[in-house]
Length: 356
Ligand code: COI
Image (cartoon, rainbow, N blue to C red; front, top):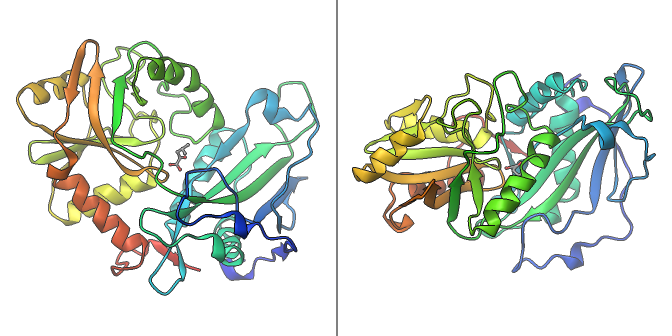
């Protein structure tokens, strides 16, 4: 079945909430567009997907994902070009990643046409919800979860795949202050660190609450054996500019998320002739580079956060203060380059953009 031939039934709302959207004040994740996509998986196959008015769900209290966490999600963004046409950034890459998460969490694979055409059609129907101003977008949240009604522990057989969308402003409103975590652990080799499983986010709440009480914004996770090598920030991958090179943790151990923004950043930097090293990065190496004046920039990347500058990194009792972001060459160039592609101001030479 090709992307355009999948049959998605549509039931439109007669009571649009678009009047509640204030284009001058769009925060992240607070308001949802008029419609959502719903598809059920049962008896080993996907049933016909539907786009219906956004509404609450009604589920049995015995629904398995609530108890055992067989639940995964994705994050994608749609932008509007100068003519008001929506563009979706790299949805196929998120589809591939969702299926890697699905396999590890024993959920069924989502067909490409259900995922990509589902997004295209939903964004088309709710195109009025895609904001136009710089730094805004429509955040698209596909997710899947197990819906067997059964309290026993076993891989489920029934699932729901859904897509909701939400007009979004910046995820972080200012440069973030990062605490390098050396007590709690996000991921081990062989675990689920590479997936967008709900549990990866659930486990981070308590350690994040603790560091917020100490005045930091986010955690930089380190490996679970020695707390020596940095992994990711949890809502973002992480990049450092050391001298004239850019370094980021590699994906080999399967402990960090293969970010689509991460991949876009590496691609764009390499095309520009900048050396990008994907490799283990010891926190001690960063501290030494900081003391030698070689730690020039540090930033997180992610769909929600895009390029998020880090203003300080605290490890034990040392705080590495980064220079003012205005002086940064790499992150500022990337931010503009990515925005130009996403808002359709620059030719899409990589085939990253899906026109709605
Ligand atoms: C994203 O960047 O899309 C994420 O999933 C991060 C966060 C909002 C959970």
